[in-house]
Image (cartoon, rainbow, N blue to C red):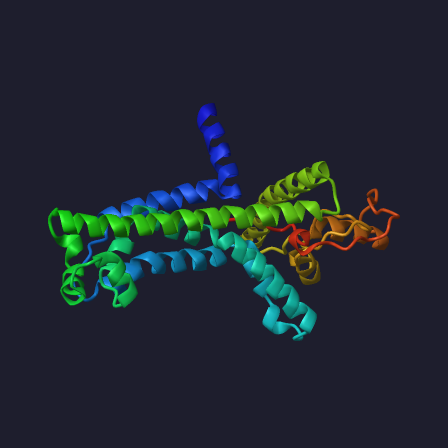
Length: 315
């Protein structure tokens, strides 16, 4: 059981880094291509192959937005607030960062599908692009070759057919590796830029992430416990027909404050919206706790490190 828990913990860490997500997407693509995909070998080849290549990627992209907590933090109640330009800019900035995370799964799908080559082979045997047909057919008659191309994925082995299919497979895998290389390079550049312009040290950033993760886990636990106590009190009062006991519950204003996205500042370096709310409540004598405010001046925070609420992703 301990080994199983360790494996689950490792898998969770990999998922947060995107590695587990890539592995799941690659496995799903292999199963999907083996079970559901069957090239029609007619004039529908291009559209059929393109649908299998791109539509699942679009579905994964939308799923990434749906399962991201930051998406709903930005959008919840947004239509009820005054349409301020700063608010819209912040929402657009956050959704751009959500897009960077949500793009991991669809890009992984497309890359794995291109390395596999089946979808690309089916799609490109139905293309009408003359230049690409010349690339595939070589010295053969173009009209005759174009008529034969659509049926190639379904025909048996033959030297000419195998040559064309191998060319298609090679083109597909080249595109796949180029896509993987470009994704890795762009991610590396963004991470390097974010770390290079970070206003805090490596160890503080590590502590920050640990804090937000622990706070998120405890938030779930405390919310469940408090909701259970409130439900038990209400049901007890209803069935026993007696006045309800007093239970302290945060106000709507308090919930709204801790639900906003928090931007780190080196002047008042709170680590989350709850941390800021609790510390600022000291001024109203709500709680007596030591302040962590610094006397230093605030630094300009780069966009890449502006928000820290993205520790947990449902994907």
